[in-house]
Image 1 (cartoon, helix red, strand yellow):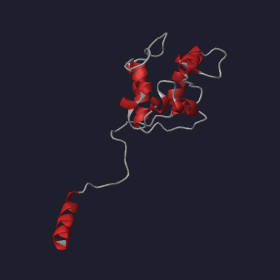
Image 2: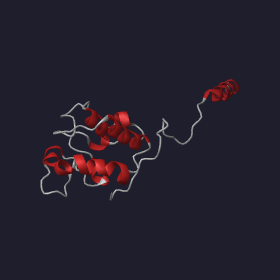
Image 3: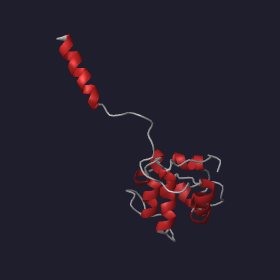
Amino acid sequence: MRRLLSAVLLGCSAFEPEVGDPSPPIDAGPPVVFSRDIRPMFDKSCKYCHYSTQQSHIGLDGSGLDLATLGSLRRGGNDTHQNIIVPYAPEGSALVQKLYGTFSEGVRMPKYGPYWDDDQIEVVERWIAQGAKGDDSE
């Protein structure tokens, strides 16, 4: 019986998938740098509603989402939490969904417009697809 079990287990090992380090699932294109490529768009569109560093921050007060630093962005808001950015998965990231207006809660962002065009959102998607790396003090 042991020999039969050993033979079956040995034979099954040929069907085991290879296991290795996960890698980004898609070719994410040229590197996106948070401070150079993403932060300026936030500064232009999100600063007056979602930056704790501003005198008025009605969006932060209502949603709990602080975009003043990458660290605070990673914490997400009341509805988004850590799903705000899902590294290597832009389609699962609430930030992308909010920019497209497909998130299950609230309205499309920026709330009072103008909405980001597809090219701007694509930069965010590429950054997330590349792992959403950056310095938390950015």
